[in-house]
Image 1 (spheres, helix red, strand yellow):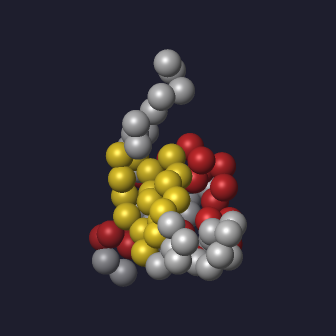
Image 2 (image 1 turned 135 degrees about the horizontal axis):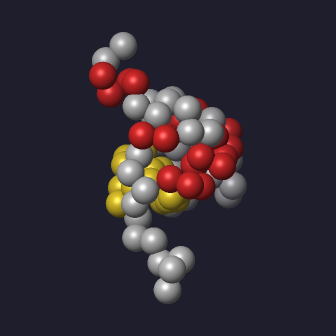
Image 3 (image 1 turned 180 degrees about the horizontal axis):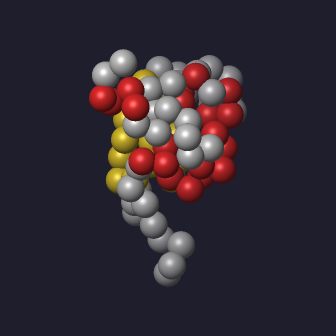
Length: 76
């Protein structure tokens, strides 16, 4: 196991999330959404395999994912 394999959803910063690309588009999840869907202890290198995060349209698992900064506009 490499060091990057040890990172979990709970290790993401509050303004970070994951972006997943599938056949029909790009979906972004904020950290708090990911914690609610898969839990804070879900490992980042396997999180795309979780059916909770699969696309609702094409029903395919993500082709790839990346950590992104997501601007939080809920306080406006």
